[in-house]
Length: 79
Image 1 (tube, rainbow, N blue to C red):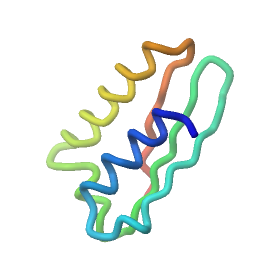
Image 2: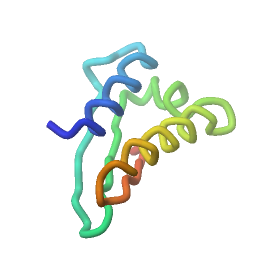
Image 3: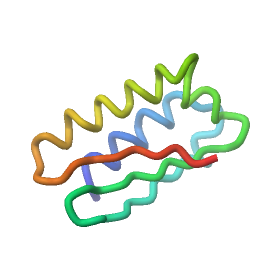
Image 4: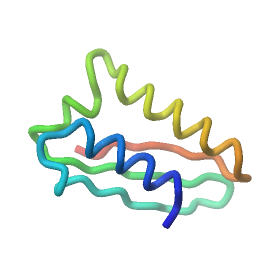
């Protein structure tokens, strides 16, 4: 399993009330890898955070982890 996928899942499961509803889909798009995060509708605000701060922090961690590889990591939070 991809380390970046596990990182996103770990962070999201730590934030939400329903950790079983957390899912991460990995889509390889050539030079970048898209990680689509889905959570329960009630937990969406917890993952995004106030003014998007939590989502921004998760994207920063993903970008830092992706620097070790050759592909750029992109996090999309699905509604």
